[in-house]
Amino acid sequence: MANLPDDTASEPPSAGVPGRRLLVGLLVLLVVAVGGGILIPALSCKAAPPELDDFGAVPAFQLTDERGQAFTQEALQGNVTVVSFIFTRCDSICPVTTMKMQGIQEKTFDVADQVKLLSISIDPTYDTPARLAEYAQRYKADAARWRFVTGPYDAIHALVESTFQQNMQREGTSAGGMPSIAHNGYFALVDSHGHFRMSYDSRDIHKLDELIRAARHLARNRD
View 1: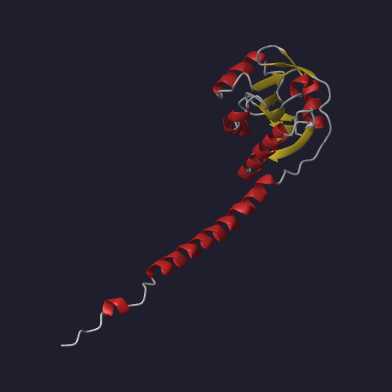
View 2 (view 1 turned 45 degrees about the vertical axis):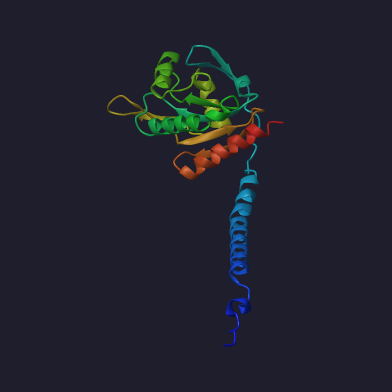
């Protein structure tokens, strides 16, 4: 009987391996394309510097902090400062804005030596250093970073209204004896040269994020 041909020897080489290689290659290209489409715009956005105004240098002043020590414009030199406007008897917007300042303190702990916080009392005749110290403790203020200041009414009024362009007008007294003082929840940003750069509405979470990004940018670019 004649020998049958060996079918195995005549089979073509398997195409499985090149097919898998092609599939893997296509997947790699897809990952690179998608990753690049996400990463490149993200890096571009991150690198864009914030748009900041410059309202000029904060003028000379001499106030008193919650420790009873002198606090002057020199404290605004060499570090970025986030400024808020509060009074300890306030039972409306002030507790909210102070909690948001506390949040800024926590979110900038890694640049603690470069970003400071300052709360200025707009009820300075009542807010003594002792009352401000108790208020600072209530909100877990880091004494190395966050100062609370009071001082002569006229000096505070000029600083708040003329320099930082905020409201500080007493509009009477409530039935419970609380002062009604016109003010808003804006935070001010001061650069390391003591220049007022921008105001941010603390009621807007996106503006607070912008404030923190701007503070970090100014801290990195202090020259």
